Image (tube, rainbow, N blue to C red; front, side):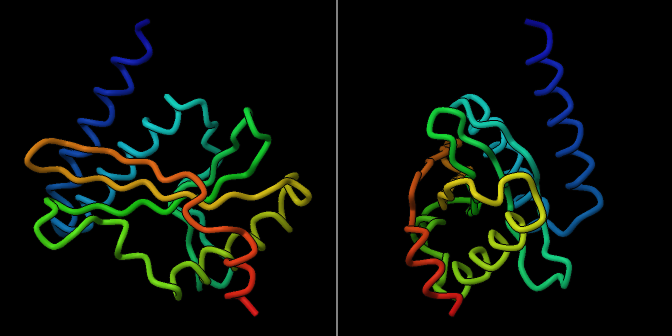
Length: 151
């Protein structure tokens, strides 16, 4: 399949350009989002949006995807670190961040064809060294927990 090598090449070109134009931490985060995007696609999720923001700009979701197996709308937070010396990246997600993702999920659903679709909140953790590791935590927190945080 010729399509996959082209995607990987385009990712590599985009990552190289980012390293020249962005601060290193921001570029690393974007590289992690690329890896998470490809990983989720391999798992059968259809990516609908990346870096989706509310109209007010208050909240953002790294990846919005649709899981055809479960017919769920999946809101994914991507966290990355160069290494795990200071703990796993997914431990960085605060209750405030979960609340913001819940708010963004509500607005996304209200303004889309997915208004009555079940929701799931996932986390993809990316560690770059000593070797690249992508870990997917499906159902990282419950919709009820996230919605309770909104109120």
